[in-house]
Image 1: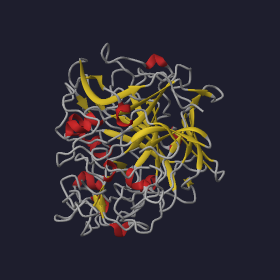
Image 2: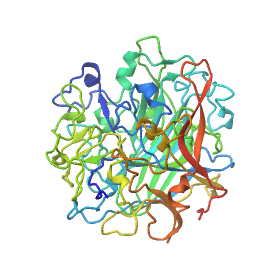
Image 3: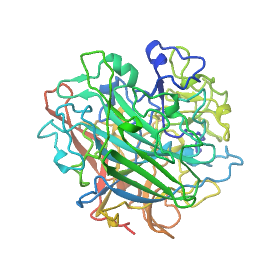
Length: 554
């Protein structure tokens, strides 16, 4: 039986690409020039980007994320584009003796948590039509009947826990997302995909090297709603990814917050009210804030930002209002992104910029070290990459790695999740079911659970996505054993009413819906076959279970 692993997760941005690095393979010694072009590099396994249905096909290697999530469904007009959540942020145990076996912190059990929604982007996958009617179910197209789905992007309103290695380190640190040693922050992320599956083409190599095939618009929430740097990946600079304490919105552990997402004339607005402090964080996905599409030009050499107001795609929320290129079949959702990081116990990894060396190779946990605390030590392995020394952390001086954990042997797969033991484990993030309607007082009628484990197990060689053979709610670790623990959602009774939480039956649990069986049976999803002229393929990329009602609506 393994002891709980100690691993310090970094807060959710993942790898950030610097143009000179991508173009030449060399890392600049100093990256303090805040006018230098930078972007989120979704082709690196540390990045917190939207999960592709087939990342191996797009990037040539697996890039994925373990994403247990909840969906909310409603036929009420506006349910796909206007909603409000009530949230209580987690608190951590004491920071004394942080390497005690079995002790954990929020930043260790997930690198980010987010609220999701599908948006219009006519320059994004599947590149078949030049229109998208915002806030309309006319955009629903089943790929089994037609490939002419409007171009789609995915919003992740990401929340980052108090971090380990902070933004910025070495000017802006790749793989890290902690804005502050003690406070939370939030950012609006919009992920798009430059790919035409019908004709089997992708963005030209020049542009792909600058912004990536899966490109990301990014902006921290600020007090005045004005972005601190250009949000789009063509024009983004170091200032885009550098928290500014004088302008950006921060929250304290344990704060009660209200999260609203709604459309405006100039794009989707995200508004977070901290009820504990009275402060508000805002961001509109508008051209005036530097948001833009990347012009799809598969045969040329251009890389052009088209200023763009991103609007929600759908009116309602159902099993048909999906992101057509995502591994998960979701739109209105809550998600914890887990399984990226592992502790590097022993000699710290070298302090190299962006988690890569001078040749562009990821830094690793030195050979002979371990990824365990306690008597049962496990040697480092191949997914201990994009590593950072704990000396860079202002609060928790622990060395760790940020690569996608395909071996299922990270701390998240041990029983260190919120369970009521607040001396050893954090409290959960408590969130309500969303409310919608003109007055934001109408509940969503159904809730559901989904997890993309089959996609990761496929990359690990234990699951056949075509047949479902070998896919499991309890994946196999890299030493051939089932995981010790996998987190699940519970409805929880609180002083604020019924709330949802992910963890291990936290205090006040009403129901855990069968624990891991809550994720339900394999889901067979249709996707447009790459280069197939519009033909479809089916894949078992996830497990999904939709309840007959929404049992937590207060």
